[in-house]
Image (cartoon, rainbow, N blue to C red; front, top):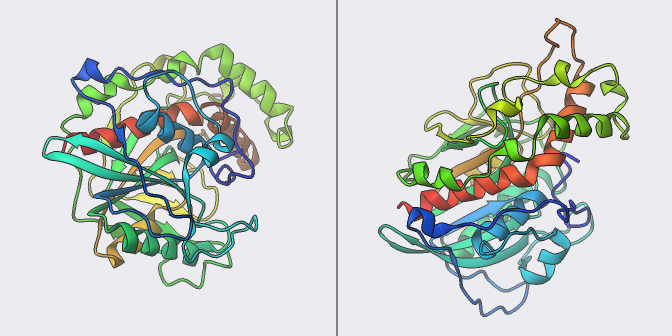
Length: 367
């Protein structure tokens, strides 16, 4: 499982053994988001109006979003198969996806008390994805449909991402207002958007972030030396693990994943520095100048701009940059790097997404 494959309800990620902590909002003089009852008229009905629409994508991200915005008073995490019965389906004018079911996804509505007043935030788990049918057109059309119904002032995309450099530790969060798009899949390459960068002139308020970071989950609690070693052994014995067998944990560890560096996750603003959006699973070969690496956001930015709507991307580092060679200088081939990256995402994606959801909340509550 990786960011590439963990996005449809039909293949959920199990969160049964992964518990997210209860959130003590009062510790930073704040209150939890308040759910808003929706007069739901079915999946083909229009969405309710909202000040902000917040998309997320993978099942791990969805579980974290549900916990932070709807169920933060107690420890736990819901699996996506549970959330399909608790969230409201939206598929107005949506085509079928690669699994045969209708797109676009599932939603809930909450109110977040901001400095300037309450904000209605439409939370949406998207089932449209750049790297899966109906490809880039489906992603664009989803944003247009949601924006036309909800009429938001801002669109957020939040969730997991690959690290763009070794300074981005597991559980850190990158916040940016731009995305560069690179397309490789034949169904997407006819698009005129590949190679372009889309930037919003707006950037959210981050004055509350210093306090909000105290609510982040330190990944050192779960990504211990022994747990990482266990994850590596499991990955070696997995379906794609053959390429990892020659390598030890010492070979694969770098500063971004070293447990000693994971105790104080941070949110970093990258205003004016784009993240990289690809339709293929991409791991940076070394340090890059991007804010993060992910698989949808530049298209979200393009479609939001077409709807004359501001946008921002809040991405948690769920799979850190994997070194291209061991400390002894032995090359680590791409299949091994990808297998290790997937193992890290699969093991810790839910916990890192918890941090990303809190960071996204902080930018709204601080405004």
